[in-house]
Image (tube, rainbow, N blue to C red; front, side, top):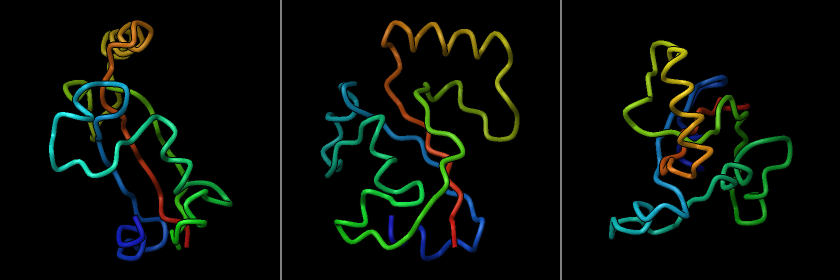
Length: 107
């Protein structure tokens, strides 16, 4: 995250889709070194990111941090009403396995 923050210009955007705990996809890829949760972004966002105690030097503003599924992610347009309702129903059932991060570099 330090490197992402370093290379972004002020106001630059970081956009990521990550599998998150407790979904099994967060564990099945052997290249995943750290398991992310729906609160991990607090270590990198806000006025006093929690990651400072671990050496994180940057700061991001969270524009979006929410559960989703990859097939509903659209970067260019907003979700349709039907897609948004589907996402909300799946979230309510605990059926979402990916977390969408949309951050702005604060410099």
